[in-house]
Image (cartoon, rainbow, N blue to C red):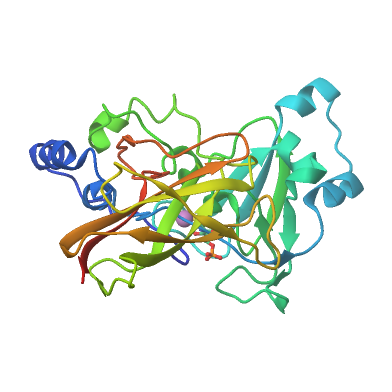
Length: 311
Ligand SMILES: Nc1nc2c(c(=O)[nH]1)N[C@H]1C(S)=C(S)[C@@H](COP(=O)(O)O)O[C@H]1N2
Ligand SMILES: [Mo]
C-alpha cells in the first residue's frame, strides 16, 4: 500500500468514458483499470497488509487511562486516532476512528504497534507508535500517532468522512458524490479477497507433462471472519474450478493472509486468464460481479492473472 500521505488524485472523470468503460469491463477484473481512471487510488487486486506487529493492546491503555462514559454510551462510542505530524493533501492532519467496542474486544487484537516483524517500527511505517487494526482497512491504522480520544462522534478527518467509503454506483463523479458522503459509513471491515500472484500478468508459461501449470497466490478473509477456508482456481474463465491447497505458514492466523497453490489444466494459446475465488470461515466469498464505486475501494472481484501465453 502507498506511503504517507496517501493522497487521492482529484481528476474529474469524463462521465461518458467512465460509463462506457464500466459497461465494457463490468464482468471482469479489468474493472480496476476503470477504477483507477476514476478515483486516483487503485487498489488493484485489493489492498493487503500482512506483517507481525507487536505492542500493547489499545484496550489495556484505555483501561489504564479510565473511560468516564456510562455503559450505554460506551456501546455507541468511538476511539479516534490523530496524527498532526504533517499535513495531508486534503486535510491539515490525518485521523481515523473505530468503535470502542472493537477496541475493547481482546480477540480483535487492536494494538499500538511499536515493532513490525520483530524490528522497531520504521519511520515510513509509523515510528514511534501506530495503531494496528486487524481485519479493518489500513486507512484506520494511524501512523505517527499523536492523540487517542474516546468520543461519541466518528473522527471528522477528511479521510474518514470523504474518502474510503463505498459510494453507491449513482455517485459517478465528485459532484454526484456530494449527496452521499454523509449517508455512507466509512469502510471498516475489509472484504474477502484473493490474488493470483504466480504466474504474473502477461507471463509465458510452459505446461507440465500432464498439461497443467502451477498457480500460487494469497487470500484474505472478510473482517473478523478468518481464516480462509477455501480457494478455488479456474483456467477457463470460470467454467470449471479446482480447489487449491492452503499452505500453512508461521504466524498463520485468523487475520493473516492464507497462501495457496494449485496445479490447473490449461489449453495452449495466448490471451489466457486464470481466476481465483476465496471463501472464509463465515462463508463469505468473492462476488461474480463486483460493483463499481467512485473511490475504487474494497474491490474484491475474483483474483486474476491475464494476458497469459500458455505453451
Ligand atoms: N498519519 C497517517 N497515518 C496513516 C496514513 C496517513 O496518510 N497518515 N495512511 C493510512 C493508510 S490509507 C494506509 S493504507 C496505511 C499504510 O500503512 P503502511 O505505510 O505501513 O503500509 O497507513 C494509514 N495510516
Ligand atoms: Mo490506504
